[in-house]
Length: 287
Length: 329
Image (cartoon, rainbow over all chains, first blue to last red; front, side, top):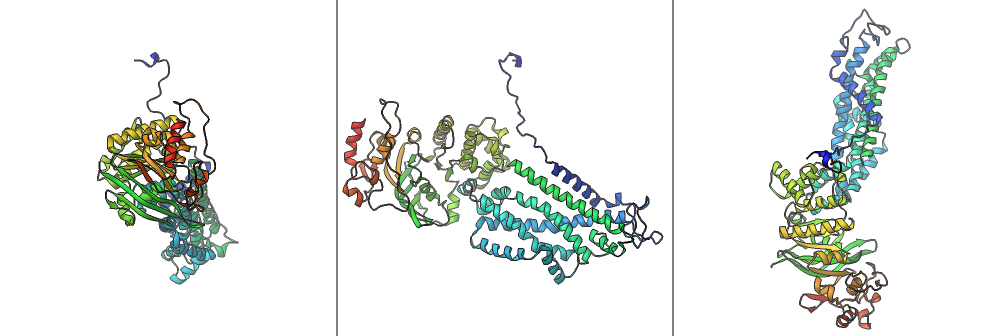
């Protein structure tokens, strides 16, 4: 039978049920900046014209030119190459300094929020204790005890950072565990861990994911600050904070040494923030 | 038929700002295999708490006393993990709000498979196939295509069907249905009730249906228990209770529902409101609203006593009531 013989248009066999979401502009901008940053981070040698560590005594403190678009530093190292190579290290900092606190904090927050009671009270005191101190002061204090260096910086950030994720997730879990579907899981005889992690957590995790993006931006700032202060990455490694510190003595005569790594920090931080905002918007739409 | 569930002296106290208060008191009933019991009452009469007490799905600060025997095994005082082994596998439950009882971020298929994963030893492919079967069984068209949908892509009736599919995954012997049709519109209500009746027949399940809708009980249950202020005030077969109610509250409920078979008459409401948890009296809780009350009703609580085989009522005036209801009819 042909469709024309029917008195009405038959419904299409496969209706497009999944409708396309309009992606927020902030998300797209954030993703583009992040893609740019990640490309440079993974393949710095493809883009950097020079070896970032190679001294060139014939080109010391040269202002930006065609040969050296970002100029050179007091050892004649090409600043464009150093800034590009710093992407590798700084993106690593953004990822590694946040991934452990994010996972640990989310897991702890899930358990704290799900069980509540005394556990929650103790956790609340701990959070109060931690947030009394400015984040950066605590981290610097821990690094000062452990000694400078990247590894110790990760440890210091990890020791403090998980608290913020745990607090976000615990708050959401407290809401989720009172909803009917949590009860439905209990009725079905599911275990506590299955209910908490598999059923409730997917509903509670989005604020933590959004915060993760912000946290990466914060950790780049923190990592570069520590690098600048000599507590994080150590010279001669190419890291934005280290680069800016290297240029600070020449700032009045050779401004380009510090300016370009600074712009890279701002751009990358902006990218993560835009991504976080975009994600927040997207998840709000989804709800 | 053998007894599946036998509840006696069930009392559940919940912690409220005013202290521990009994939401359910001294509830007795039994349920045979393949039996169906309707638990009827107003909001706050304790019917949902009764059901939740069976599986101990109560707020943390709640006390359950009395005896709940499941296939001869005492459930009150059973450790949590032993009880968990029973939940879903032997006794399953469906809820009033199918939207909120389904996880909003997990696909329907995954939620059914989750139940199969916990309660059966099917492998991944087997679970997937069974999930399709369960959805088909509950009357969802093109189930294999619907598995990957999220709950918000389902209509209200379909969500309740999916909820039923999840509950039936482990082929339980008893289904507790807590107002399963209240949130649905009338035509869908009817479909879901028929579905439940058919599944009960096909799977040999017993069911306890909690509702405030007498018509729903009449349509889908064999026996009925009427609850008022935390107690069962009358129980019997649907035929017995609906034809000759022996408790003034049941009579009042029946009179407040229109009946197409009788000449039109004014619907009568029951004056007053049920007592709150905090101020339940020594005597019969219904006494202040009751047209049959005597001095005895205010001081002594009537026990739930047999009137005919299988028919019991908790009323001192049960004898007078028979005659009156015959007059009214």
